[in-house]
Image (cartoon, rainbow, N blue to C red; front, side, top):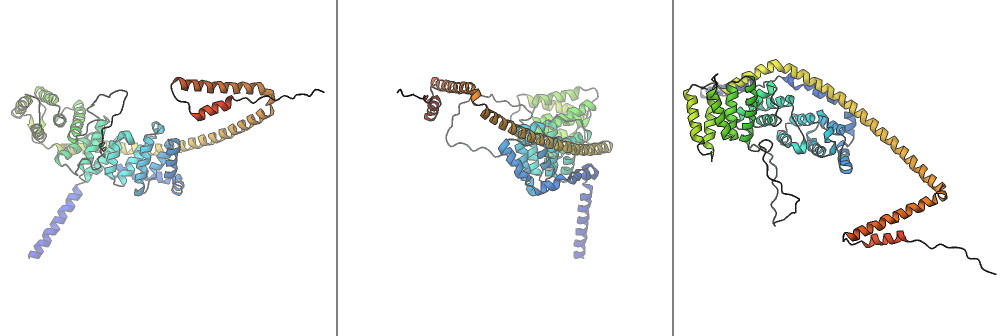
Length: 464
């Protein structure tokens, strides 16, 4: 009986785990991934050519020799990375292209291809590091990719990276998409409730080594320290707090409700903006519509405030008195904010998912046409440069032959050119001497050789 009881418990535990796995579904359907259209890029005939050639080596040569590469070449390389071993090469090319002059002409599909390639190979730590380093990689999320990434991370209980995607939307000040805005709020609340995986930054930037000796460097001017409270933010709670503030304000403009006011108050609290916290509390207390706050969010606000190490003088008294007014005045409800956000996400998905899918499919088709047009344009430009090079070589050859044929007819012109050349060198020597610089022996010897005139030899007739 004991053995049967153990087996029964194991079966029940397995069924419970399977049921939880089934219930843990994504908000978006599989059709949202547009896999067929995304894989359609592999039907391009250029793929076989790129496989047979050392395309990565050619790109590196262009960066080393010319200091830049063609935007279409970088786009093709990022689009056709089919092996996880080439992800490091993709990161190198992306970084070098970002630092070259042609980055202003980057195709809109390049950033999308890089992000989706890393996402498909599950290399999320490197992906999040690159997305956060906008200066060196230039990867920017759109609504479609943001929804796709957040939905996938939430399915895996990866609230950390889902919240990071929400932070990127805040930094780009993109709050308009209904699915993205509610997914972002849900991700932030999810991370606050379950901070996993840890640590926040699995691939931190290496700190520069401290010099052994003190080194003084002369600079033209001293740059005053400046903190913009936006892109300079690094603390996780500050970033999540400002994200809640951004999306909370957006919801307030549409429909001032409990989710909006709770997000706004919790955001300012996590952001440690003391005056904004008091201002938000006064707005809630003075509102004629009597907005409600979720007890879950209010409890987290109180816990965060009491963890502050050095609040302004008199802040705690003002804060506690206003919190007491909220609790006594019936402004607090016991609903679960995550459940409400989950319901709103499902509503937004049912309304806008099909439109997003059709829009993304059209973008994939548009990018394919743009690639074809750009390839043709580049091929024509290469052919034109070849023809111009042939013409220039022929012109140079004809000019040299002409100079040989008419040398004695243009003798005065050649002598004038020679004198101008000597005058320029003399002026250069005087300029160097006036600056106090020592004229090199090689330069002086060259000037003497250029100034040397051979004696004219004339025939002398002997007198008989």
